[in-house]
Length: 262
Length: 303
Ligand SMILES: Nc1ncnc2c1ncn2[C@@H]1O[C@H](COP(=O)(O)OP(=O)(O)OP(=O)(O)O)[C@@H](O)[C@H]1O
Ligand SMILES: [Mg+2]
Image 1 (cartoon, chains in turn green, brown):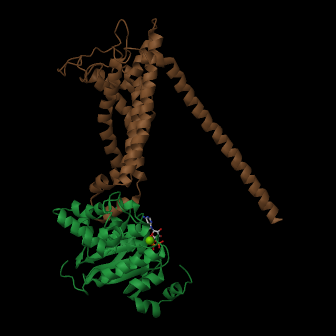
Image 2 (cartoon, each protein chain N blue to C red):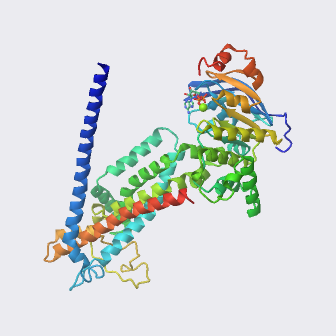
Image 3 (tube, chains in turn yellow, orange):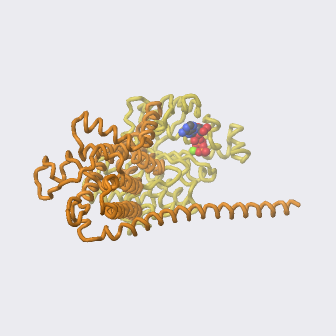
């Protein structure tokens, strides 16, 4: 993890397909590559398979009964889509932030420390304090909550809760963070703060690879370096965000961008 | 034209709304009056006796002022043993059904079996208990036989409420914990159970109220013999040791049933007194359930 350089391919999918209920193929062969330090936006109309694809990357689809993922997913060059892959180890380094903020019914501090403690990573109060502070600072939440770390996370606003979830994910020291429409339940100002947070994580030079599903084209434009467009279970086009937005090649993509559907 | 139609429509909806509200208010009112009538009637009939000197502190065999001390003790002890057995089993079954059980016919068969168990008449459960625990296993008429009969009667209710409580926790909490590399078990214990705890505790206490008043399942299993207890006894195997689970025991509800069956002068008063005490206990369980549930919910959200 430590020797991740800016441009190493962290995650690569090859021929990844997803089938629900054993018959409904929701995602057809998808090949994508994600690099450290980059932010990739996944866009496309509702139901096109963005979340489905995202959930492949941390093997969360395994939690859905009767869902099958085919193909290969390389993480640090190793195929993780195998029966023997240790899901729990894997998810410690591939974090995920959901559409609805999901703080646990614990204090702000405990929300951050919960998983690292469970994984036996923390020794002593100093380490805990430091982790709480750095994670909250990275997620741009520290100044707002530093005096009420012992209070319930549920007392925070929606945007703060979402940033807490990001902080909680960062506290796991992942090298990949997956976001599934992290701002769709938030107001514009909270959305803006979260976008800033994502950008600052990308620019911090830690080589964290971030992948964000979004319905908001401006958001994709603001936060991402690369963009992949999905349409009815196909990954239709991918490229730098600039190129995708200014010179789309596929007709469906240009229709989508001009708002003809979606 | 369209406007008049709309007006008529709005009026009709308004009327329907009024009628529905009226009917519902009547039904709720009727239930409340019924409950109040029963409670007040029994309390009025029984309060005198229940508060009379010695009633709560004398054994039922007392010649001068027979009381219900042992029945009271036995009721609570029986409840305790029942909960000690049924809560862990129900918790385990509910967790298994919600978190682990594969979606197949075995699981749905298990769910159906649990539901069926809940609709078995308690007297039949008592019959089974008497045949199996009392006779086949040779435990005799005993607290443990009674508690196990009550357990069978309690498990389906508890499994259902705990299952519901777990299912009511947003799925996103579960997914978030799994996405942080926690195992299902860690997720269940650290995220799901704490979040469901207020509802679980409320469910347990409400079920305790039902168990506390159950008579039919106990008549053939723990019996209706007036116990002779010696609170100073230290020999757990002694039939007079209050905590010996292999001794017979008579609970308040069974006591009422027994006295009604053998009409002797003065019995009626004791029956009403006992009924009043039983009722107050059950009402207290319900109040406790609400208070505990609220308290836990508040503690969980504002820690
Ligand atoms: N758990 C599931 N079980 C069965 N089918 C599912 C499940 N989740 C998604 N699908 C199906 O897979 C397809 C893709 O869904 P997915 O949620 O990945 O789309 P999406 O691009 O994320 O859409 P949205 O923008 O609305 O979130 C849809 O047809 C959907 O009905
Ligand atoms: Mg989605």
